[in-house]
Length: 410
Image (cartoon, rainbow, N blue to C red; front, side, top):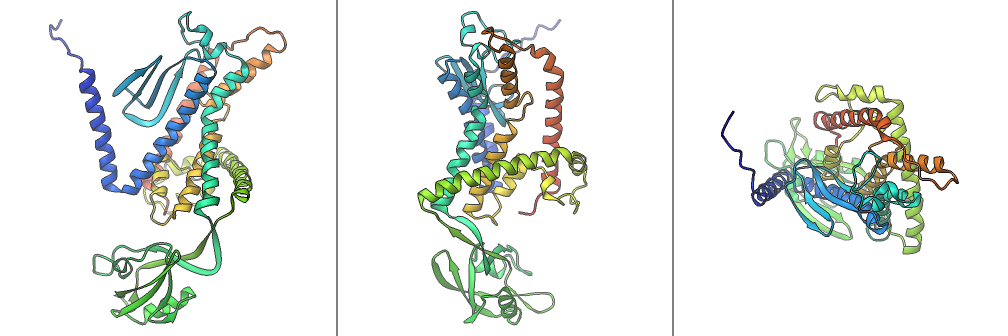
């Protein structure tokens, strides 16, 4: 038997190490891409808001919540306010709120039993279980209203084009001609050396015929028109190069508040339907989805048929950080993300919120008009729950691999 004694890490030291680890990770991500850091912080906020919904609903209905943590794993640091411990854990892949007595398996002190989830009325249990998704839907509705009222709904403008992508590197130089001129995605190049470039082919012709020349470009950015000069690059075949990709022009259309409210609920309903359809397509085409998880890196077929192409949080960060997206398009992505997560969490499967809603509904049906509380024996559901957790882990890891090995071209 060893006489050595293991000294536990001081809570303050552990908190400092945890804070340093999280800060270091955020700094590293910011060093790689500030846009990625911003998107990651938005996703962390969405996860926090989901659990905040559960916490607030539990408090409003008189239930006891003993823990509210961001992340999973061992505690990094925490503090107590009243009866709840708040804190952070190292694996920032989610969050959780611990409400006492969620199932018949939870051991609850007799003094807390009246405030246990399982002892509450059906409407209260329904509110607490669905509060996370309700928060997602609330954020989606606010985002849509902001999009239609203040940012402007992006609508494709027929017969017009704009800069879709700016190539960073030029031919044999550090920056392309477009990058040196400060051209940005969303700009419209109106003229080259005074010649109109209303059509994309007009620009291509004007650039091709001026390799190595200094040209003046008239640019429309938002409501401002200005001119810049740049020296065009020369391609391998001797033609001129600017270093941009074009796309159909996007017109941002704002609505008055009354019209924006109508558009908000109409678009929200449409996106709910699209999310349900997307989940169904993945389920009925799961064989095709699984094949993607085992695709080789840089497989050109891995991203065929985007309707059945799953996206992980890694992919969401990649897409959201793309410089090809405007602020309005990022808001659309934020809304779509919230709607999908809200719908997904309502699937009637444990450990998802929808599983608790299904159990509460089944218990209420069994109670009928007898007035006697019916509690389902959740031990019978454990094998199915473990299977769901294993499937979600496989699906999540497969989607992460897919986003790393064959990222979407945004």
